[in-house]
Image 1 (cartoon, helix red, strand yellow):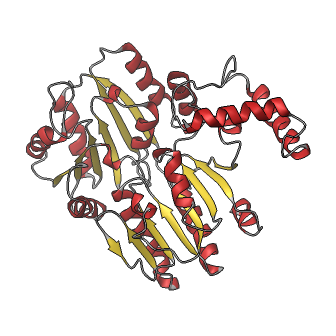
Image 2 (cartoon, helix red, strand yellow; image 1 turned 180 degrees about the horizontal axis):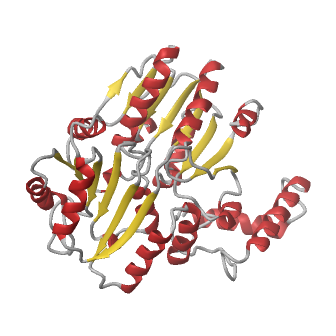
Length: 402
């Protein structure tokens, strides 16, 4: 907060990345920054990647800030609430368009920034007059690459979790018996806990061999006949999705059979079990995000990764996740698998044009390169003394524009 406040108090617009693991408290930090903007007479906006997450943020911010007299609006494709006179507006991509009016937009917070394209982030920033910008990610990037990929951003790292969090136990299960899994889940439900059952597909597909929520939901209703089992997926109407989530938050249902629509931001401290089916079909970062939906309360939590075991690489990936809950370590393994993306362009995966012998081992070389670049720009901001470098950068920018 000290770093963010210092940025917001100078004339130069803030351009800061808040990087922290799932459940580390980024939302609370963002709210404090937005309150500072409101206190100075400006509006603040938060853009979230999904309607469910935007609505949850709206619910949470309104609960926290209404007693202070701060008006919080919501703007999504399907819903508008108190936007006209709101001091804080929370929304989805709907914030990018002219049908949401801003009055002196002083701070923009972009949640789960990796879910948005570079152009989308730029479009929202253009809706204010040189606003402060805080981008947040719960998919940690290895510290080695943060130095380079976010060379244009100041970086704050939240690397601790709030106190009072329960332990998360992660296990990989190859073709487990459904009867044994059902027995374990019922034991947890009878203790008053709640569970997520996550599938990769909404409906069964001829081309993809994986289970779907629509097919599996009735089966789980039969297995858990003494409990309330609900269905959640992205094809449902927004009002229906929010109603399902509200009932789950209020503990009026015990089990949520869902797709990855719950991946980011969903916060139900009483939910302590997650079973991810066909887990090998998900990326490491996505699995880590999903697992972050549990372990948010005081109870010991369990994440079960179910796989058929046929893909050795997929199995190795799941064992990495089972071995650690440290998002930074997971990000390094994800980097080895996927590559760091394109540093001087808009592509967000693959090896791009960054030339280092080993992205993870060459930390000192990456740090030295950044220090040299910063020194060069301080001494020659227009690159008038470095014509070849300037020409090369202009050439790269032209390629990026194409």
